[in-house]
Length: 162
Image (tube, rainbow, N blue to C red; front, side, top):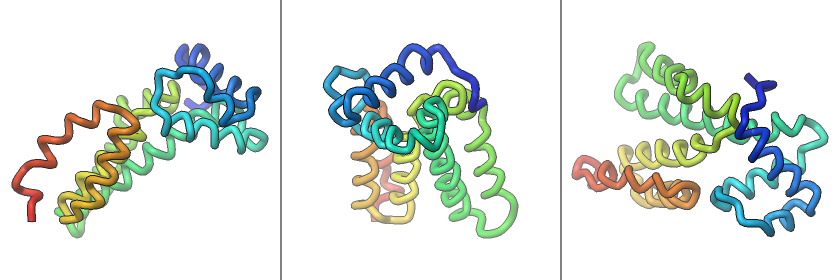
């Protein structure tokens, strides 16, 4: 899926990437973008490794990395319940290869995995009774995408309170 260039990639992400690159990277953030600053900062950082990878791969690399972060964290969550056995690896595989995951990050370069990874880490921290860390990564998720607010009922559940 890496060489696939979706309409979003062609019409939105690559023009942003090129604009940032040609206008001085961080100085290229002078326009109004419909994405949150944390994603745009990651996009600018990817322009620094531009010489070693193609533009399309650079944009997609961000989402792909966070897809793996989600899968590893899901593995950790399931590992808390099933200390041995295949269940953690099955959860890892499902989290990484679900069609909704595979068809947003790889062909489209969508950034949903960034806030999703923060939310999964937040739940992991809540389950393991680390409230400060949970709120820290929840704040990052909220900064990336406001839809993170829908996890608040999970975080206020008495199950996670010590």
